[in-house]
Image (cartoon, rainbow, N blue to C red):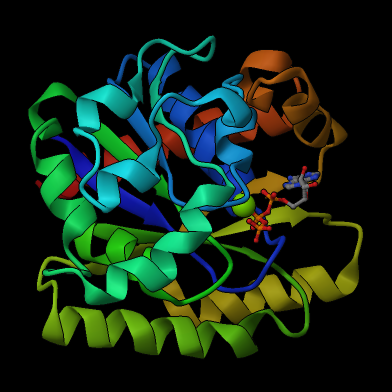
Length: 257
Ligand code: ATP
Ligand code: MG
């Protein structure tokens, strides 16, 4: 039975999609069965997995509004080794259209229930907002992974996210917990980043993953080849860090079980 994780942070450009596609690829590499759901109208996780968002027959949008079965939107065995449900700009309409539908926050959860036994991990890449799409991701998930840059304002936005997660936990999804904060785009030469990293550890303790994702240009180049960095250049520092992170996820879950 798959464990479902939502990769979330309402700040834009903090590394959610890079984390989603590379964690998916890294987990696949270490033998896990993975489904990645792109829940962002930008469709970056779709393109970054080598699937053309412009030519999707069905996407997560149709699934959410009840026009397609999940199976129709699911693409098997991307080049990176995991399955994906793609998204494109059509999905932006769902923020409005979902409002009038029954069980509007739980539609992704119901859809994923039909395939949960086929995977070890289901990862959800969410958009940079705390709207109905992200809410669907949080309602479907057992845990949240929060990628964050070690910069001055990083902690400020975090309290909104933590409050939203608390509310979802209280009202909609008792399973939900923060699995961990992942430090990304880390540059140890920058003193401020080291200081913020220490602050994050002091404040959140063992909720901070040991793995740290370095700033690494290979991770940034990979999407233009339609590949996660882990597949594009497995020997790069960024790829190795994501493999470490994937192993840490597997180990943490084994301890929790
Ligand atoms: P959005 O909020 O728009 O969905 P995001 O949180 O998904 O953004 P990404 O798209 O993953 O963020 O990353 C933002 C930019 O930073 C991208 O150009 C990506 O290639 C680059 N990037 C992410 N992680 C790294 C890294 N570790 N090293 C170098 N570049 C990175
Ligand atoms: Mg993104």
